[in-house]
Length: 514
Ligand SMILES: Cc1cc2nc3c(=O)[nH]c(=O)nc-3n(C[C@H](O)[C@H](O)[C@H](O)COP(=O)(O)OP(=O)(O)OC[C@H]3O[C@@H](n4cnc5c(N)ncnc54)[C@H](O)[C@@H]3O)c2cc1C
Image (cartoon, rainbow, N blue to C red; front, side, top):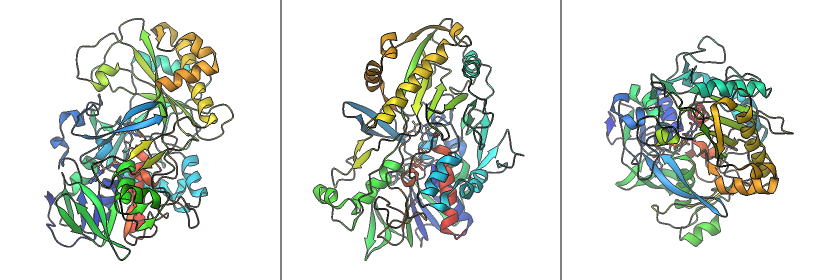
């Protein structure tokens, strides 16, 4: 345990030191609140204390099976396909293990949340939080950006041949340049903002907690698993942990989009029939808990390089991204293509000699119409909820997934990219040519971007699926909030990490009357 506050009285107990949780806690402490932060995984006080595998932004080295830095779940992507789902475990949460892609949700995303009755979350309302959280090292003088915030944001200007070829391919196909992915422009191709500084993945615990260690108002307890919220007479009074009960005036769940709805259900807040069937006493019948899950279905289009490609020193695996609108779409871009610059054996495995292996384009649907579901199956907190993504249930999603696969294949065929490509691997020409065959190929190769959101979403009075109001207060229980990607009405049309941090910032503002 670090921090000066010992076991005294807590204004707020926060469960989960992840992307949103760390930002929230830091800003509450800055506002003079006494905060206890409980984290199931390991605590590391200073950036240098984090294991190399979590610091090293050139790899995603901590997400494999059995990693102590992750929770490992099994999810059902479609009726036929199971897939592992991981979440970060330890201070920093998923920001400590993720890809470091740090792109804001767009104006269309946030104004869409506002249009659903959450006007405190419009783009203009959240923009100050996006600015406050960052030190944009490329654009700090720009009015849309912050220059002094805790999270360093940089764009890689990569000289890698794949990055160059991809830029050329996007231009050839007529996609506009989008030089600042964190500005309010039209979707296109551009350099990827990343929360990386000098090769280090700067997670939210490094950015927000490390500078506040030693504050008398902050205590961080690692290796402490919360198993439910303690509710008395309709008010949250604390949490049950594996070590006993902790009391506080207010409880915030920031445990992520799987664990927060799971904790609500274990505490008796969820769909009544489902809770009863699992043997949990019902406190609040809240049908929206676990419902309306959104994510980014994705897959990889692999290709074999014609020549061995250089592995540049300290090469980050990602450098640029294309966001594009599917046919008939008008929003901020519902398709995404991410060129990987290094083979997956190096990205996910041990560093080793460069191998001449297939490379991949990541292809994702960024605004799915299908909705997934988390279901409580046991009153035992150690049993994971059933996770069903129900990807591609809607025909509009199947159509757009075909479109993004064809776009990926087209990019590889451009005169800019083709000289690097010996062969497209994995996707046969006949599957590409015919819709039914392509649907089948997609279903067999489908994966997930690991961007779960919406499992305890916000919404106005009268919205039966809304678990929290727009102050993120759980309906039906006083003194209880959820502050993480669970509350997003829909996953943003960019990776959710930056928006999760902004959510923590904005929630602190709302909790302290800002
Ligand atoms: C492998 C991977 C790669 C990703 N790559 C990217 C990317 O490059 N860009 C991007 O935008 N998004 C990415 N994401 C998604 C993004 O990182 C997450 O959506 C975001 O970080 C979630 O933030 P959060 O605050 O909701 O939860 P988290 O950051 O997951 O934090 C939840 C915290 O709560 C703790 N916790 C959970 N249960 C309990 C309990 N019972 N008791 C105590 N503590 C508990 C967890 O251990 C964790 O520390 C990736 C995710 C993963 C898993």
